[in-house]
Picture 1 (cartoon, rainbow, N blue to C red):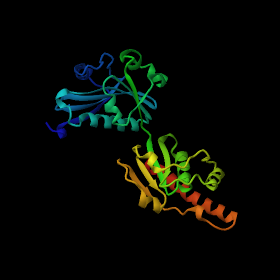
Picture 2: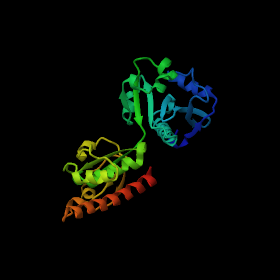
Picture 3: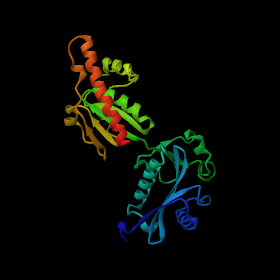
Picture 4: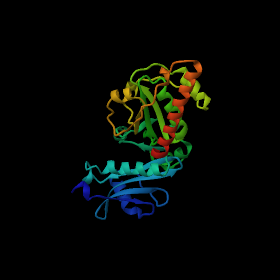
Length: 284
């Protein structure tokens, strides 16, 4: 048996019998498995279902259900592939957060980016599902996975250019992404950067100047370096983050009258604004 022999199908309408059998073999609840309520991605060996994962869709929230792999087909990457396909399908449906309850697999899901939360903090429409209100015991572990893209903007001191970029990326991306900025060093947020962004209606006065070491454990989707020094010194991230680079001029180095310096900040602000708008358009 090879992993490449497995086929995957996405079912909206299905005969629940085979899925119920697999769930029963794995000691998972199956009585509420009906077409129209839960959609499934299944793994097939020839015509036999050897793996399944389900999704209940509640707008921007999704409930992960009925995740099982036949005992004879485990340790072949089938579970990982099913979960990845479900996450991909959820993103396409504009689901922002996946929710689940588990009695035995919390370590598995922790390794895949889920975090543990108190059950009472689940959204009301998730609490009211059969899974939450009837099926799973109170001892179940409640977990979430945020599906928004994660973006890190990196510069030398996290003082000016990266702060401006963070502000515009948050503005243009909205709830499509979680945006962070950091520096190889920390110089504090430049007051002139705050002032020039305020002129354009973007408030970055509550931003902090953070060191890159604080973000090593976040699995970023994109890392954007906004100065050559940061690119050359950008640390290795143990992830598949896509790297982007643009060397913007440093307005903090501008000299002359106050008005000359303000104009330099405005010029760089506009360059970064245009870049961030195009980045969001083409990547999110």
